[in-house]
Length: 203
Image 1 (cartoon, rainbow, N blue to C red):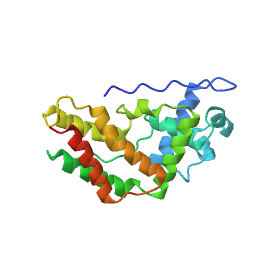
Image 2 (tube, one colour):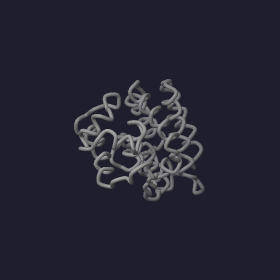
Image 3 (tube, one colour):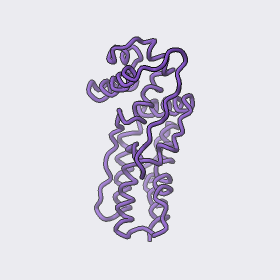
Image 4 (cartoon, rainbow, N blue to C red):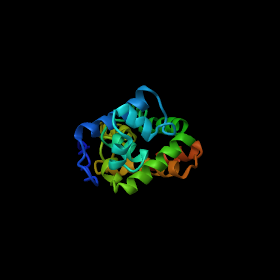
């Protein structure tokens, strides 16, 4: 997949955005989440401002909510989602089934549901085209399965006309939808989803 192109910055109302302060805020979010181990619920605009060394109103001039700040930090690569790798045992179906079950156990919880819903809401407000990012390798949720599918294609395990973007979309998008809905599917649902994808691209 092509390297991600950073989203164009919106022109904020009022004074122009300071590049230094902008980066300080995004870096502060990353430190709070990854080094100080705050979760989304405990993250606050006040806390981000203090960590970044800027005023709270500086943040509100550029972002309307903490979800908007976090969304940009994720899309710009400052915050990683830490999605586990897909093993490569040589059997695509088994590898993907193992991965989605780990995903089910680690991601489907109240904290992740709240985060996912907030990020989607922020993306709507900020008019972010998620499709542009979900079809590139900057987001681990899509980069991880895509890499395993690409490896299978390279060794000739998939149909020559298999569309890898469509394949990982068919795998990941339903999972994202279920996460946003707050409903945790049974393990059998995940296995069936993998079977549909693998059968669709397999030789």
